[in-house]
Figure 1 (spheres, rainbow, N blue to C red):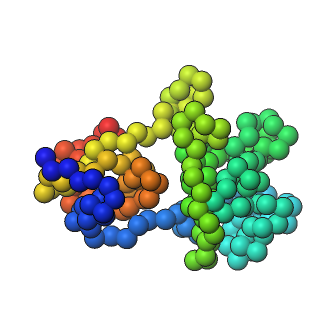
Figure 2 (tube, rainbow, N blue to C red):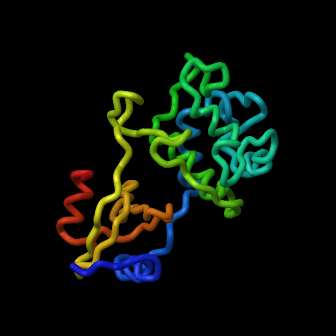
Length: 209
């Protein structure tokens, strides 16, 4: 099997696999739907507007990002929005407050964390990028069946191969229709057609292995 090394050959493989541009999280497309589902009772035009914060209004939120460090692009640890979601249920600063609504799932909290780390893109504009925490570091969120966290283990990198036998190591973030979202070790996320993957790799999408 042909092996492609970083960094230039990785790009060549991705072009061969998909011919698709890098996928970055956008507030309107990826984050706002979560907040509309979980936070609209207290932070939307359709419900209450506690703290003057409307999470279903990108223009409003864009103007609030810098206020009281609500969101610091590239720095999830300094972003009050993320910190309130990350705090354990029952904590005085946790959101939503205990008994006031459904908490975000670990996967959804990680998505918010990634959005901030990628620069908090909203209305086509974003700031500086920053790193995501690694396993064992403060702020790292397990998303699987772990005794210490009570959640599933996070998706692990694996080898993906295209129909020409060329391979790449990446983590599967999800599937959108006929497109797979794969994250490289450097944090870059690519989306490309599943039909261009080998039969074995397509089977891996279904099994999650």
